[in-house]
Length: 216
Image (cartoon, rainbow, N blue to C red; front, side, top):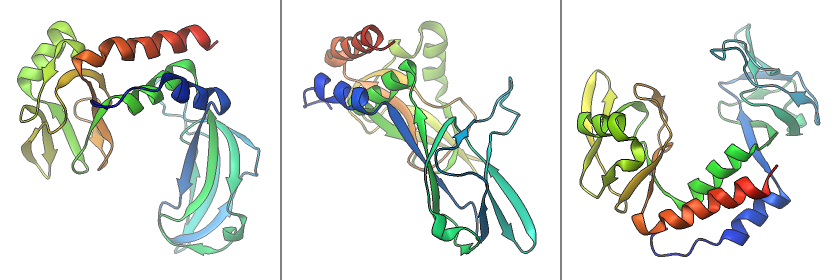
């Protein structure tokens, strides 16, 4: 959003009228599906210190007499279910249901930021690390002290035991948000970092301040 104005009222009014995230759940593989929840059922995401306790079971999928229950990844309410698929064979990736997740203030801020920052996405499913000099600067002064520009080697992609440098291709700016933990596996197309042009920093801060003030 380097050349566009940030439309505060439009963005914030969207979240005021519908402060939810809609999380679609898909069949993890082929098999026969049996739903374990109904529409408007409350569901919970994983819990425990390490998120080791699974969330609410949403559906069971049976392939070659090997049934597997699939749990919710977030808390909320079941917004819709594709009931036509109950008891039927489905293909991997078929949409089964949607969970309406109520957004907290922090999540609303992050959702808005993802609309106004330049998002640099994972080019492949792989493990990612910051380049050593970038990580060193982050450790010393924090991510928002790091200015990057197109062509900078900012991240290392680890795939099939091979490390490949990843060069930045977005607009110049500071690393405002980091969306991965070094060493984590990240899917193709998922944002790695959010970059803010230096002249947009006051505007981004205005968004954060306003949401904090207006949301309970």
